Each structure stands twice: as structure tokens, then as C-alpha cells.
Length: 207
Image (cartoon, rainbow, N blue to C red; front, side, top):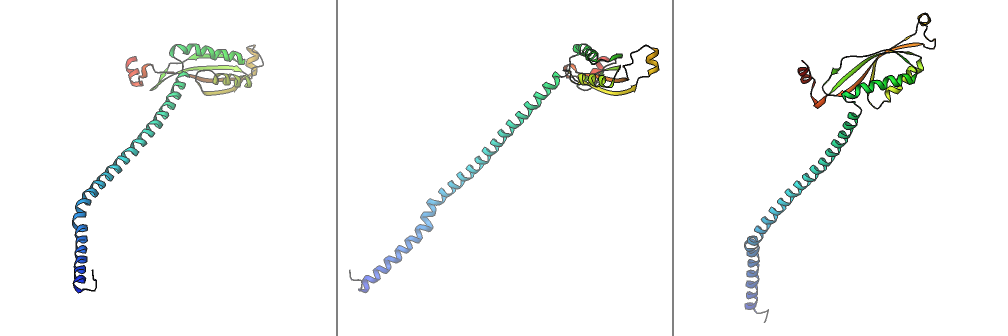
């Protein structure tokens, strides 16, 4: 082929032009026809993937929170059970009060008054107060209160009043001179309301 031949040169120019036109036509017509549907499909899959990823992450967080909430519930439940064990049942109150007098004797105090009061109902608890008056020395009172605090059931000490013993009265009553104080207080034991009934229901039943 003689490239110097004008006819050959003309044919080459026409061929290059047609090839260029074909290239442009392919990329503007055929390629989009095949590529765009695939591109749309890929875009749809990508959107679905992102959606599923978000849902998966949400589920993971939910599961994580559920485990944390269950652990918190179990911890609080264990504390509640332990607290219940510190509260005597109704039938155990008398035995608990006998323990109070026992630790008082161990501490060396004398009971001048030990008078149970009417129970007071609360929403979940019943208060069982006892008016107590004892005579002894300061350190004996301290030992008594410490022993009460260390009992296996909760007993609250309130309204504590301490007065010195009148020496003349102790002589006249022939009481040991070792007593230096008298202490009056309210000891309160707590029991759970049976069946979890509230105070209003309890009052209706009692009336």
C-alpha cells in the first residue's frame, strides 16, 4: 500500500473518521444501555446493604442493652432478696423481741419498761414499735445498742433520751449505785406486708 497515494490517504482518513464515530456511538448508546441497569442494580444492592447494616447495628445495641438491663435487674433483685431476709415475718417478731431483752441482759442493763405498741402499716412494710426504758451505765448502753444493731434482723432505734440517775432515789429504792443513767427509746422491727397489699387495702380489710 502506497501511503503517498492520495486515494489511499483519503481512504485512511475516512476509516479513521468512521472508527471515531463508532467509538462515540458505542459509548453514548450501547454502553449506557448495558451499564446503566447494572449500575442501578448495584445502587439498589448498596442501599439494601446499608439498610441491613444499620438494622444489624441497632439489633446489636439492643442485645447489648438487654444484657445490661438484665444484669442490673438481677443485681437489684439480689439486693431486694437480701433486704427481705433482714425483715422478720410476723410470727418472728416476738422471738426477735426476746433477742433484744437477751442482748440487754448480756450488756448488763436493766429493763424498766418493755411495751409493744400498735403496728403501723406502710405501703410495703409494717412497723412494730416497742417503747423501751433501761437503766445502766454509759458503756453498758453503748454495748446494748451495738448488739441491737448487730442482730440478724433490722431494728431501728429512735427517740433516744438519756438522763442521769437520781442518786437519792436510787438510795431510797435500794438500787445499785453502779447505775448512772436511764435511757428511753423506741425500738422498731419491720415486717413485710403479706401478699404485697398496700396500706389502703390493709386499712379497708382491718375496718
